[in-house]
Length: 235
Image (cartoon, rainbow, N blue to C red):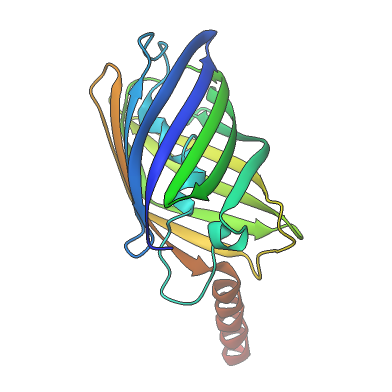
């Protein structure tokens, strides 16, 4: 897989407010770039919800499908045979520095490839009381942990900067499933190098995310080896 068109949709109930967010885009695994152009339904976004928070909650699964790799390492889309889902719903949480919870969203998703198009369908519910956000802080580390045949767990920790200059901290946990009797060969670490979200303050949102895969297992082994060597020389 190198370059695919993306058809993206989401049904949402946030703060008791129903809205849709739909659109299209492109993903390129050679560059690790995913670009989406989305439009909210006429109801718009509820107060307290900021789409700048979406890349690491609503869209973390889509961007991981196109993370570039400098080796033969296979990510989730290749391992699953081009079709996987988030089940049960992933949970995204954002807190301020005092530990107050500002957002808790649950998002179920399915992804499948057909005729050169990646179809992404999402359903989101929850509560969001965010201040207006300025941007996501990068780089971000996203971990994908094998959980046996047809399963894996994604864990992402990230930070966002509000328009007032406050730094907020988020966590997203995503349980992935697929039907093929395949599994990830090792834990994977993804580096999300850049996240750019442009929201017009009304209904239109564009998002561009660039990321790459790195082997978490190899990095852990390298870290342990360095620690052992340092301890040996110290003795």
